[in-house]
Image (tube, rainbow, N blue to C red):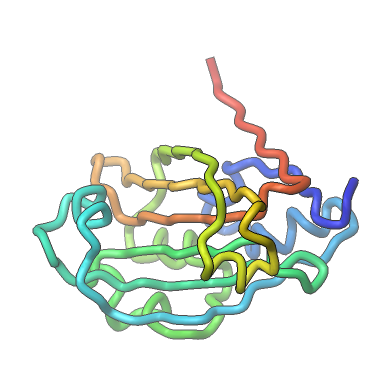
Length: 176
């Protein structure tokens, strides 16, 4: 495996009670996964976020931004959006790590993931991504967008994960 190579499956990221999924996944390959929370603030929902979360245009959401580190190197930028009606007054709106992770906190608030839809695209990196991920304008990124739904079909989390493409392996498994 290269310095950044990491296999990834999404199930551990949408299962409550699992602890720090990123740290656990990295540790399973002898690596160290950590994260740095760079923002947690209430904003007006960008149009694609409002649409995905079935909110009115410009509805308020909490944006939680993180830089995911593998062995101390930034490999992913994660922006997660939550309706303010769910997130305000909870640790989702704070810049501290959440014990058990956001998926466990959300489950404790009554938002247990029943289904998640992942969309994956690839493109060249932006200036911000180049700066934060220490890559060049020629380096592609993988963008994984995940929309998470409760059992009643209500979407409650919209995340955009922009990751370095070099050495990345994503694996998806479906029960038939």
